[in-house]
Length: 570
Ligand SMILES: Cc1ncc(C[n+]2csc(CCOP(=O)(O)OP(=O)(O)O)c2C)c(N)n1
Image (cartoon, rainbow, N blue to C red; front, side):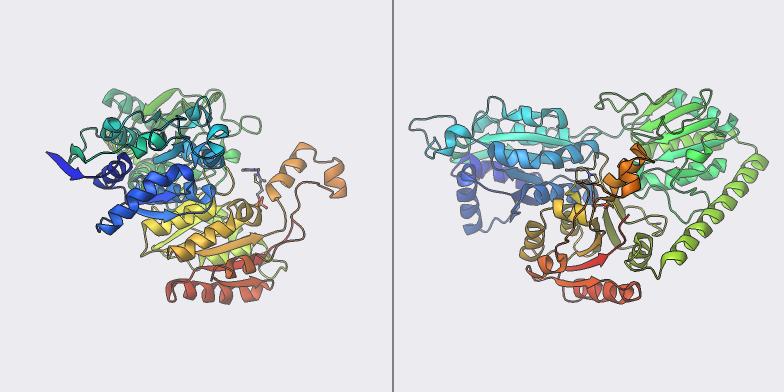
């Protein structure tokens, strides 16, 4: 059915359409291009039309990361709008993260006024010449699934519906719509649109049965099949079928740089986080949503080992260069592919004695590695400055199945087990720093009833535009617990130097310019300036109680909290 709503401008029609399509929030980082949008919001609010709720986020890095965090928890996109080319430039890192993480997002920017004459919205500020670019979409075109510049108000319904359908069709990702000020400012009396969008996202897909049968036969015939997984837990519904498949074969599952909870860590077939020592024995590798399932330069499966890849896009077609074998690519919705494969394996009836023997062997390995990890934590638990393994263990003690954990780097999953689907979110594959703070705020926006803990390195914290993030947490009532793993430097960079030249000057002298963050800011003061409960911890024994106090502030007082944990340098 068509619906007619009275409006005064195209900007108002646009907001009406977003609300009609279920967009709950409009995250904005405004500039002069927003004038018609803000005017339209004022009218909508005067008329009691609250949606989509406008939220100011005073830096683009947390704004885009918030939209990312919201979508990673709900599967639904938000609208983010930034200021013309300069705001878009600040947002690009977050768009790259969302693209590679396959997270849907309606990313929009104002477009500098196009005209110099008398049209409503035309240029009237000195910036309006310098802020125009030849092709505004070009800045992010490589990392969005679609981009377009609205030309006239009559396009708006199709543009909104097309943008959302493309963003949410798998592989999901951001889309980019630019909105010139003259278009937004155009007078309208009413907007008419279909109550339900006529442009739906693609349905889920599953590979052809014959290919699934071939994969099942290969798995059943293999002596040492292993799974390497990174991101299939993006869909929490994909965890149970992966468990079913692993159990049907007694097959181990390795999380390799996991971005999600893909497989319960307490399951005896969870084989840890490093498949490299086992690649030599594997005669079949099943890579599941794994863009880089091993590092060929270090260790690769034997050439004769068969490689089956399951993913929405097993060839990762948006990656320019990627040579991992795909002997059989099962493209489609991993949840459905894994379920179909588990059923096909059950029908193929693998030898129960073989499955039992494999399961017993990998269960032993599971217990051995857990024992080693626990011993590693025990060895460092009294170290000061604190060891990150101990910090991870203490954070893990706070986590229950209703807690969401966002981790930009330093939480160590060998010391912090996760079992519940949809509870863990690691940094996106391209690791554009500054994602964590905003992603945690977006997760809280998506799930206000759940506790959200955000673990960040001190480097990641600074990249996250912390004053903007803490301002946002307070202004919009998003009490998150932030834990800063403060090693006063960039471990990742130092590790790269040591790997590059293990016996080199930097390794021998310990001098590594451009990787130190000394002297460290008092991060607790940054958070406190925005009303947070904030503490610094230097004593390992004091950490559990400090974290408990911070969690109480978050849960009971609905106050954001930050614990600045002074950790060892590497
Ligand atoms: C936007 C951006 N700039 C630079 C980098 C390179 N980089 C990768 S990890 C890292 C340091 C992260 O520091 P921190 O969060 O403190 O974690 P740590 O490495 O110390 O464990 C840097 C600078 C990046 N990934 N993204």
